[in-house]
Amino acid sequence: MEDVEASGKTVDEAVAKALQQLGLERSQVDVEIISEGRTGLFGLGGENARVLVKPLSTEQIAAE
Image (cartoon, rainbow, N blue to C red; front, side, top):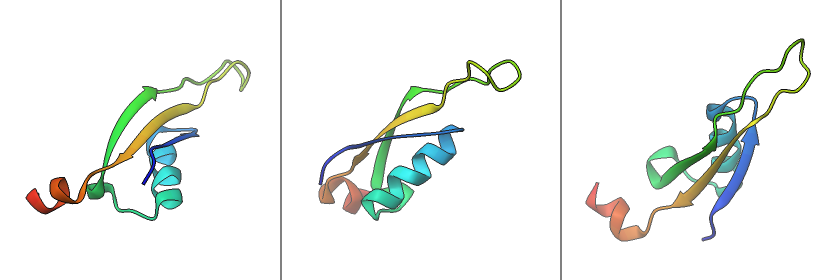
C-alpha cells in the first residue's frame, strides 16, 4: 500500500481524509505532519494543514 498525502483545515481533518482514502484505522498508520497550517487574516492568506500518512507493515501492527 502506498503513502498518502492529504490536506485539510486542521491536522485532524487531513489525517481523517488520508485514512478514508487508505481504508485504515489510525492505529494502522504512521502520520508525519508536513505543515500544521495557519489561519489567515479575515480568511485570506491561510494555509491548510498537510500530512503524510504511511501504512504500517503487518509486522508492526502485530507487535502492537
